[in-house]
Length: 88
Image (cartoon, rainbow, N blue to C red; front, side, top):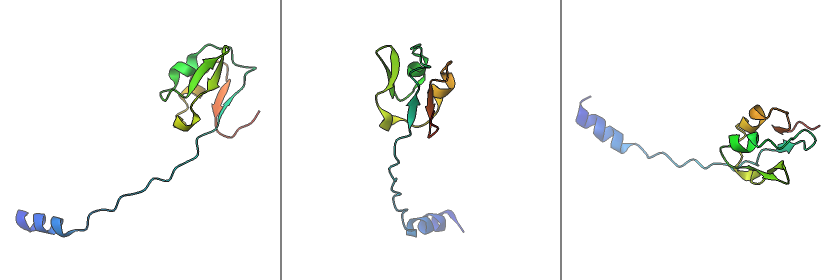
């Protein structure tokens, strides 16, 4: 097959149909206020700005933006925040 045939064959293919993304529910972000000492580490670690300090403790301010990357959970020195369905 020469280059012209390859171009012609490529042009005869049907274009790919767009893939629709199904919207997913926001991940559950849990905060144990008893454990939170208000260090602000998790807030700084969140790349999506889902968390903020309110009244000296961390609070979820934009759960819909959460990608469940887990950086807040990994950085918290007091295990006061976690993502998922684990309950205390």
